[in-house]
Image 1 (tube, one colour):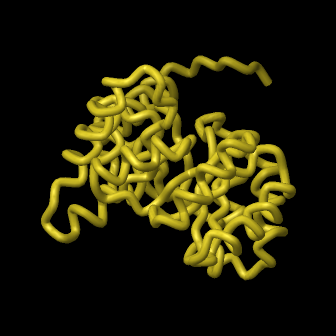
Image 2 (image 1 turned 30 degrees about the vertical axis):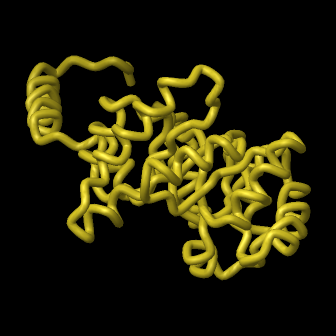
Length: 220
């Protein structure tokens, strides 16, 4: 499974990119608004830090303006992935961009039928929102299972399932078990993946034993 981070915070992106665990970045208008930078400058800086796909979302509601925005955004860097909403105009834009060789992330997917449309439109990624479905009492991970199963029936589908609206590590591990290709998560959730009380306890014991031994790896 590939890990994307869902943020526009450059400090977090730089810090996590140094781990070698980050395969891409997703942004959206809400995240970008918090960054306090010109959007194109922000995307350029992120693309300079992370060589993998960086999703930059169009904001126009109509196909013609989406295309103009996408043309502007995809000139920023080769690894820009244009993010469009799962609407008729968004899918029309996806088809046009995909035919032109541009990566497209179709976002705000909440049903298997929508995921089929995204694949038909040539999306590189479809982003089902598990957390938002959970919030309204629906089964977010069940949607992931359905989409992965449908896509597996057709060898010609190249669209990757990008699990979005990730709220906690269980969303990540369960999505991986289901065969999702990508999880995009806030920096906090990626850092939570490290944590286990037995790791902390074991490390503390090893450290205490080492200090008592008087042994050294590096001599003075």
